[in-house]
Length: 104
Image (cartoon, rainbow, N blue to C red; front, side):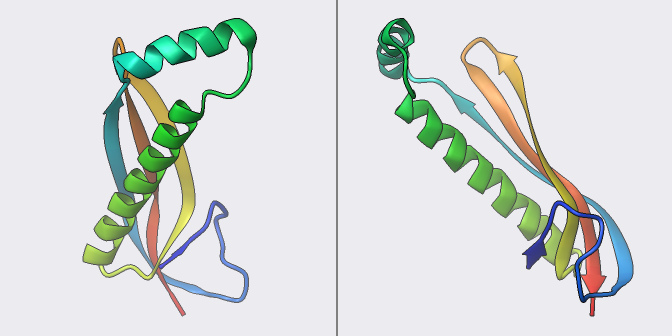
C-alpha cells in the first residue's frame, strides 16, 4: 500500500477514487508517567514516554486506515493526514485520514 501526503503519486495514474478512509485510536495518559512528565517540565527536555505513546498511536491509526482502504480495494492512499483531539482530561484521539484510490 502506497500512502502519500500529496494529491498525486509521481509516475502513477489514478484510475479510480474510492473515497475517504480513516483510522483512529484513543490513548490515555498514565499517572506514573504524568509525575515524571511534571518533573521534566520543570527542568526541560523531551518527555520520552509521551513521544513513544504518540508514535505508537500514529502507527495504529495509520494501520487501521490502510486496512479500511484495502477492504475497499485500494492500492494507495493520497492526501494522508494526521489529527489529534482531546477526548477528556488525560485522553486523546489520534486520527489518520486520506483518500483511497486505485493506481496503475
